[in-house]
Amino acid sequence: MIQDVITHYMACYNSRDLDGMIDCVTDDVIFENISNTGQSMRLEGKDAMRQVAELSGNAFSYRRQRLVNIIASGNSAAAEVEFEGKAAVDLPNGVMAGETVKIRGASFFEERDGRLCRVADYS
Image (tube, one colour):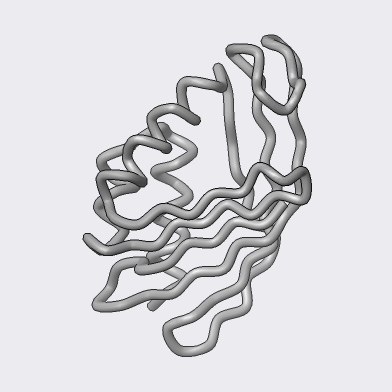
């Protein structure tokens, strides 16, 4: 069930279990981060996703995602997500090291063969 995969993926994210996160996705996963500030990105494949996950993980001394609500149908799901993190370094968006970031957004997921094949985060 897609909700179980998403819950496990977020638990791995919150515990900084990078291998666990990457195990939740397909080899050809599409990862998108669409931001209203104009710093959007689109990546394809586990290796690219791992690299970004490592970089973004190192950018925060503390980070946590909370699943507020999820609506699923078949192999697709939409989720309302809250993010909170404390910047470990100065970030390109102007957030300075030591500052807390709180963002509420939406994530869209698609699943294939028990793994996520698309993750699109909007904030």
